[in-house]
Image 1 (tube, rainbow, N blue to C red):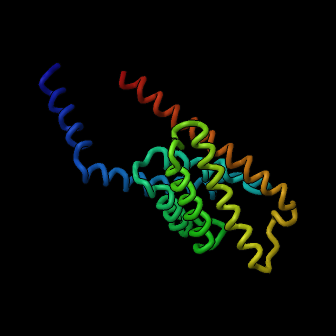
Image 2: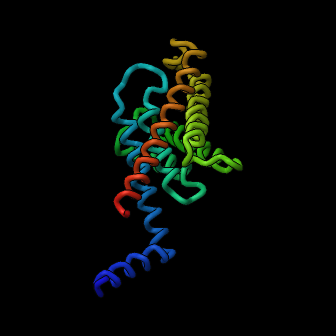
Image 3: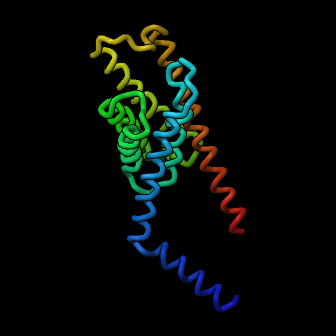
Length: 192
């Protein structure tokens, strides 16, 4: 190895061993994943099918929670998504988005705390996404029941809407897992 390579390698090793650098990186990831989740929710193609946006926004949350090391990262990304929803213009109000995405992120965090559940495994990502999407569905049902406005799922039917939330939640978990697994495999190939 040449002298410059050792200095270069030592420089990067020092950054990753620095507590504040790691915290700064996690904070940047929090902001970036929150924005990505809000953008994914906003940009999804409207199909008029309950929960059809989950493979977009929830996949971003699964990737975020799989990547970030903080135990409360899911809830923080959920709150950040609601905050980004203001300038991005998500269809719900801030309070609704805060409940919807904040509780979905908290559900991700809670499921990852169950012994043996690993979000970086396909079945763990599936369970996490399913819990998050059903939590978000619970917020929608609660809001609909306490509102005078008829929601789409009431027209489509509660059973069908529930099954769609289950299916799209599972899809989001598997897509998120595949993205993280592919990225990790790609990084291993690059560094080899």
